[in-house]
Image (cartoon, rainbow, N blue to C red; front, side):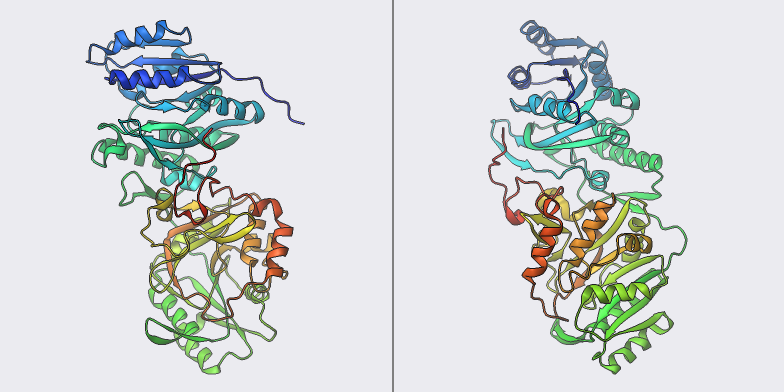
Length: 538
């Protein structure tokens, strides 16, 4: 049994610069109102030009011995002022509070509880919302549990952040030259060393929108985005991730675009019966057009096609595919009742590549470098599976990762526009998910063998959910990327019905896992269609 740690002293550090008097009073009052008493508030005036700031800090300090203040003789910027505030402090945990924001009254109690009950935690973050100058709250950000891939693309943990002092000292706290993204740079370095990262799915921080905040627009602090890019590049260099950091159209959001070393062979395993359907108003032989799409649009050339064909697959279909694929093609006969798992496992057994890509026959390539994108993730040792963004023929989202709600696996943002900004731009970002669809799933052959491939307990459905559960149980990550995009003309090539027996079997096998999706915040409305008042506001 793990012994609980003693209640920590939490040092709230707040750099102050030219803050409006009423706003600063509210900020300090939110700390004084905490239901947890073992705190100190360290305020550093960064040589504010306004005459009211320093006298106000002295007044506030006189009201509570836990409030410490200091004034810098020269303006050093947020990094210098923050480090000065930390130097004043003596708490076990450092919590970051901006001078114009507010804490929920239960914030420090919730943070302290985590450090007490999870002795190996080194970094804690909570959900947050936005408050305007009139005091109106809204736009809550319900975050996933720790998602390192998403964090490389988006500083999503942000507020409230609390760091174990010993780890902050190891990494040297805030670094010069990263003003505007100093917290992102710090948390990148902290989480590289953290033994455990814990997310509190409660809105404990109220982020105020003011004219000088990055929330006010992309052009307010352009230097912050440049600093963020440097911080991510530094992070990649420290971890040995060979990648180019690219800023997305939405400022402050990035892509860590992996470079592929060598020429690894990808075995694309396609189960098929050679079916047809109508897409975009014309008759389409699914396998033929899928292979043509792969062969003609893919910029990666080192692949083979392992087509696992039912006995009734028309010979003329296989002949046409052979004419497109040439020597890349290997046809593996399958003479048994439909069993997606068995067909994929059979294809994997005949594959020669170090990377396996399981692909439905009813797809079409959109992004030419889709294979390079998938390979970049699949080659990382702690990634067990990686999936694509799949779109219906009308461009709506079919798949951007699995979501597990109350034991029911589904597709996140199913049927939504691929330009949706829901869940703070989640669809635009590489990120960890609970699973990816077997319609387009890449993994290393060694991982596939280690976890036992696709289970024959799931011949029709949920074999991909089960496979990703096994991957996660092995300690590896499952990643989905929107930068590898395909059309998926779902269920045009087979019966789309779902077996209740298979669902019951999945729940029995993975009961705890299917009832708690770490990447789906419990405050979200089903389907992410809205953001109601959260029941978990303390």
